[in-house]
Image (cartoon, rainbow, N blue to C red; front, side):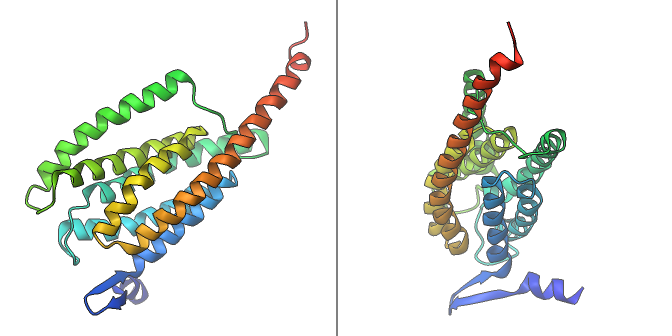
Amino acid sequence: MHWISRFYDAHWQVTAGQSISYREIVGNAFGLASALFGLRRSVWAWPVGIVGNVLLFTVFVGQAAGTEAPTTPLYGQASRQVFFVLTSVYGWWRWRQTRNAEGGPAVHPRWASTFERLSLIAGSLALVIVCFYVFRAVGAGFPVPWWYYLADSWIFVGSIAATYAMARGWVDFWLCWIAVDLVGVPELLHFRYYPSAVLYAVYAGFVVWGFVVWLRISRRERLQRRSMGPALNPA
């Protein structure tokens, strides 16, 4: 279809030597919309996010493969879009189950248990190490410093951990995103992905707000469950 081809190739010419793909702009807009739906505990967070992931995948994989300029080895940025889609399908299913069963919000925020949190942290750190060596081996021909592969590995793994924690309804997922943003913004600015860098920066402030909102909801619902305890479990 002609309009799809035109959209795929369309770029916003910022300067004589710098252009930004419309796919990057629109994909990040869908990402922010997904976050807003997530804050409101709406199932729409997942399908909207998937659309953004698909668009951003075409941007980053083109850069990594050298089919679009500038060529940049953003394998973590490209790969995480694929895992975002897979994790989002799981989250979409899980939130729909909760909404259909209870007829209310699609998720009830709570802190991860100690075991869940330690498992998430240990698994994430191990996967960061694995991804570091994999990304460095695949991108060995690119003239980038070693720290780039470590940063890209953390962005990749941290994003997946955050999305999984969001699907489970853990308040912790907002903290995961803060850790990702602290690394993601400098990296994207370094490689001149300005729309994505701006989104990350805006998202950092939004994440703090979302964390506060979910924290309050989790406390309120925990108190409600405690107050209903005697009625639900009479002596």
